[in-house]
Length: 387
Image (cartoon, rainbow, N blue to C red; front, top):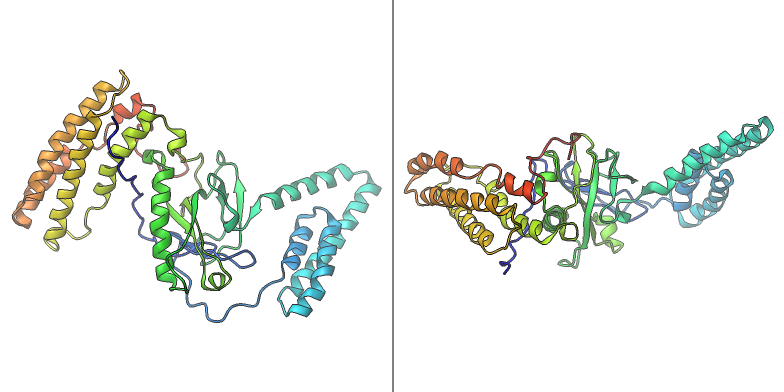
């Protein structure tokens, strides 16, 4: 008999949990405009003012084709088509188109030179590399669950694009899911959009990475959210991710239900609730906010009691049984100590019971049981080390 599934935990938010994505910590904008990062990388962009003049997409394509030297005539053709469109539509991008055409002409000359000199194979290799770069370049809005990416603009207000990379290689982030914002009709303001994005991505991230110990310490919630101009164009999508604002990390952090067996899933859904509440300890101590701290202690005790009960309701593999039972005994002691904490009459009494409560709560929340269940059994490591 399986217990009622506990709500999966969300990762503790780092201090800089603000901002946007295509717009940094939060917003991204629709294709054709820079996305504002949302999430922990930076502050939200300031007022947008009037919608910006759009940049012609063919002009951008011409420049990109010219830079990467793949299919040299393509950049020239795109530029020639873009110029009359720019004049007719009053768009930006004339300089991009001209630059792309110029670079494409140079690329064409290099191809001819390659034929003449006999070094055409080197030119072809360069083209292949360029095609590969273009094929991996994406707007944040096009990212899909499970993809890992690099975002060179992650510390800025807006992202101009991301590059999909192999998750086994160092990368900035990993996409955990997407959702549409549906609770607003008109543009509600950046704060409300960011709040909606953060709340939605916390749940998505928790479901995506149930094995929280597999997430490096400096990998946090990150999201790309709509900006005001893209909202006007119909953009309502939020792309959620787990990403590092310090150094790239290697390996996927995915551990959702599709990747776990029934024992692993049950264990994590049970103990993660306790882990989540522990991270939610009030910032102000009992001397400043006694009521909030006592309430928190009571919630931790309830979560500990429920985890202890739920662990007893599951039929565990033989090699995991003794370790799960040992964890239950530890949780029993922690329940008693957190009961004292929650029942403190004043701040002084709270402090007297405080150390005992923390000492009784197992730091590892069942490392031996995790080992037996083939889960991550060591606390999170800094990004860049083994995940």
